Length: 516
Image (cartoon, rainbow, N blue to C red; front, side, top):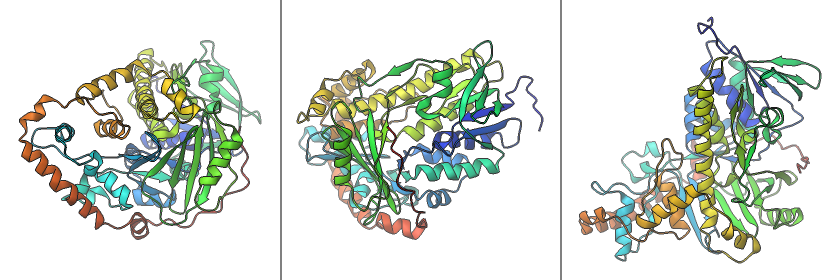
């Protein structure tokens, strides 16, 4: 096929591999599968991929489907397990836990929103809890799993799910996908960047002297931010005053027992600890504030609490929370860690890669690189990052913990005006501000608010127009019905073994190099 557009982009260069590089390459390979635009990815085996087990959110499965990838094949190739939500332990207070499930909570009662009806019942002393009506939570808590779309005439159909996956295996799978569709992979480390007179990038130069020219450059160089930061010098908006954690220590362990169908997030003295079980092994990490905890203490806490034998040496990752003022500048688009990072509490890193590429394809430029396209791209992506930032800050700013210096400092940390407005609206009447194309829907905000002890002062008056006996009857019938339906499901491990078992993984290379 020849280019019909007179000023079309002819060559896209992706600098960096890993999840960001290969998701970008796979999406471009799919959309340009009939030719018209060459795609080349430069990466080095020396640099490697950050990630020992990653958690996704449901839109990630839309990416897999949009690329025409078979979900079962992907699950088996990436050692994946299913994720129905996140279990938060010790966040509100020590000894308390709650779930943030994927999917619906209850269903409309007549024309009325379930949440408002539940608030009215609670105001009248009803004993139920909000999560009693979330199929994702009830399945997660019982360790059960079923694909929601296979339970259409059941309350379970309201659930949604995502995956726990091995980050290195995602990159490998998508590399194979992209290369078979024409993406060229070049091994090497980029050491120099040559720019045009207007400051845009002309070509990159590798350690061995090889040069690669392009029209559009995608910066997937991780925290190095080689193009967007070092070359174009786009400023970084630092959010570390709102989110105090700046470091993580991670380790892989062998699974003992069945993998649970949720991500575990347990608050610790100076941050929080995760467990992400894949089919055969688990990713574990402690995200912490280096101002409140030493590396030695963080490592000791993580090692003391992991389940199963460690498969590698614990590895440290330093990060800065925030984002570039512009993710698209001149002819460079930053995707993944090069563009920004929000700590991994709600598993949004892979989603932001997918969103970054999805928006790039929506606003795809020609060689004129219209500033209007870049401006709209930057507006939409900034809105995504800020929404996620606010949602993550919500988990911290609502804590009632004051038992360590970290948690006392968290309670004093500033919060954005946008989050203040969301919380004020919610506290008044349980109403949520919804933007266009937002990632976190009402059940997500409701789950975290309720889990952290933030309940509206009153329900909306319109809920009084529903017959109260209909509300209580709905609650009293659906709670035991959902529990019974879930009790009859296979366990998560049984479902994986019967439907998409992954072969045992190759041994992890050890020892791992520590990243400071």
